[in-house]
Amino acid sequence: MNVSEASEQEVLAIVERSLASGDRAGSLSETCRVLRSRFAQYNWVGVYLLEGSQLRLAAWDGKEATEHTLIPVDKGICGMAAREDRTVIVGDVDQDPSYLACFPYTRSEIVVPIRKGGSVVGEIDIDGDRRNAYDASDDRFLTRVAERLATIL
Image 1 (cartoon, rainbow, N blue to C red):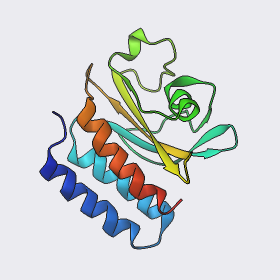
Image 2: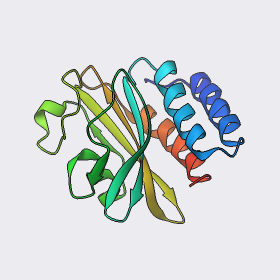
Image 3: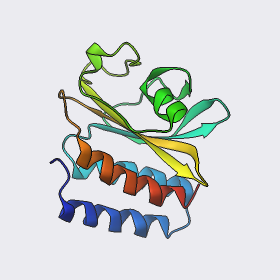
């Protein structure tokens, strides 16, 4: 289990305080920063917002920027998560032909949709530097984070 209940509650409280500020851009950035700083397996954290048939990077935290600031929903793991309205966990990105390479050190990825009014409006995208870095506890936790982010979108 990657995400403990205590860690989850602590981070959700931080995210909720940030969201209460009413600053959408700042809250998205703070959420990415907190997730990356609190969980060692979250090497790069981004939030993409759905705009028509594309995902646009709205906030991120990591060692470096990604070149994928716009992703068509018919491309990549991020596109798949938005298109199919489901969490996608890839244990080994080298074995998944859908993966859009961002960083040479990425080995795994989890993408969790952000839903509002029954529709996908964005997603949380996280890359890890080890294989099989994510499990059901990450999915459950990040779904809870996504529910909170949906309140400001």
